[in-house]
Image 1 (cartoon, rainbow, N blue to C red):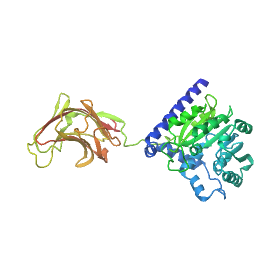
Image 2: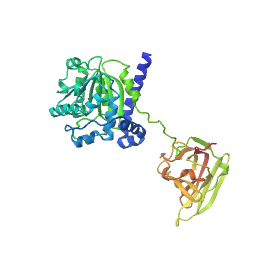
Image 3: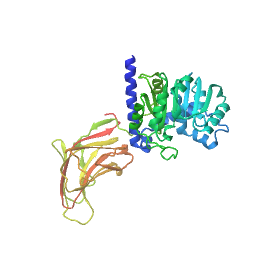
Image 4: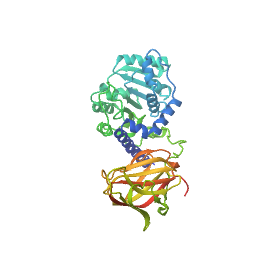
Length: 430
């Protein structure tokens, strides 16, 4: 069982570093959109489960408003997941004591010891804890992270050392983490947090930036074992580490405490879940077949042959040729095209029509980019950009009854392509 737990912890840590790396590479906006369910679930949990402390004179209105922002509120709530009732908690960098109050009130820690380099923060923290009736289990002092010793932490009997939103403020985070690691008792855990790369870089008090590789190297360089890595509200990286090998019960409990973003999430009706072959014998000439000297659209040895010659004239509107494929309840189409003679194709289009109304259009200019294979497969649906066919607009695709596959050709030119296979993307039963 211990070996299974250790293997599970290693897998969770690997997944955590990968998440940090991916979110950093994606950037804030893309990460917010793609992982919206995750962030929303944690914000909802924080809003439901955490109540504000009494602000008091030690926390000005502006700072209290900042603490109560959805992002920070989610960070406070997530931090509690790393605390166990009865813990003796040592915090480095206490600010104005708001997180200390949450540790004492909601985390139900047995005792709290906090240090901060700024004397005003020490005074404010005492006032915050007294104002909320939490000072009886707490002591706070002025202290420098770089002066921290194992004797000092061990004398307090710390089970957990917390240093959240601190080391991005110091010029040498590696040295700061090594100091924390050296001061960490053998049986204690260390929780640190730093801003994710690409986040909070406009904060002037921050002087260090962190990607996954740097954080991982910092932890390992300090001689610590990572037990859990998490990203909170698309903004902060949390790392739980210790001087001991895994598995770590605190890490497992914190991992299990995350809100499930998939609870009661309905299926997206616009996402297809089946691919149904289309009968190419049902195809017909496209409504776009115009100004052609020759047009041929017919089944040919299991494929649909599309062969066209344009009028021998260079003036006037464009010359088009293609095929129409009837569909029912489409959410997209998969096409395999044999590109026999397309050097004189200016543009390929795929349109979706609901009777006479065009509800979607994709465009591909083969002179700009050709697929590596021939025949080539193209998948066209809402939300998919593709490398060749670019969506110009995709509206009520499910209402379409026909897909038109056609080309605009150079005047007087002859082109030929074949639709070798086609499948409907749908949610409808076959």
